[in-house]
Length: 313
Ligand code: ADP
Ligand code: MG
Image (cartoon, rainbow, N blue to C red):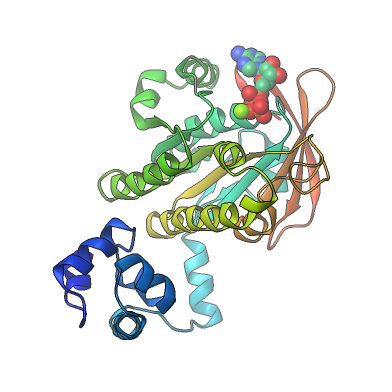
């Protein structure tokens, strides 16, 4: 459908259309918001032609308009809330993790990010009146930390049949940033056929961190990460799904942004994630979840425990 639309733009021949599609410009909006210089570069055409194509795409794309407050309120009512399984944590979040948003868990190694991801994957498959999203789950796993055994333990502890849960969780390992981004595209396609209500990227930043090393690579890393995040937002919006990304805090002061309690990913992630939750270790299996940034909830903390049966309040 969108490929046809792109081909119909004045100035776009089959070769240009193919180059655009291959470079990830898969709908009119992607072209409409691009700059002539970048588009010219990507499609190997002149800047003037690129400018004309962009203008045509702007006219043809549904840019959208302004909505009134009551329309926005109506839309807010469609937003789902995914329970964490821990009441105090849900309260901190205003009822749970929201759909149509990106929620970021950040914290040092062992702070519980992956355990929370497993718990939320189980919860998302559950009925809405039980704090779930009645849907399926996609996990993009960059650190090989997904364990079906944990899903079984967590489900059984909540009296849920693991055999009903496991087929609803789709996992893919991502081997590098490029692969990670392609998997996000794939998820977007899968979402057209399956009711995917939760997309987890665990970890969002580990490959970015490994591949883009040093100050010189910073700008490019942030740009690529930005593109990735916007794809995730698109998924959230199109499928009314929750997006959860994990992020590690760095303990190497000169590698990224200095402060060891700051998540990596810089401003781009900071501005795109709607909810940011800082996890830190406490005594034994206790963890403290701190809501750091939210559009409508005050900052605050909740204490959770990580047990064999999952995340508990
Ligand atoms: P990260 O933030 O690095 O992703 P994890 O989510 O993997 O951290 O959390 C690791 C913690 O989870 C460890 O402290 C570990 O003890 C705990 N954990 C992992 N599996 C189990 C289990 N089966 N039972 C109890 N605790 C577990
Ligand atoms: Mg982890």
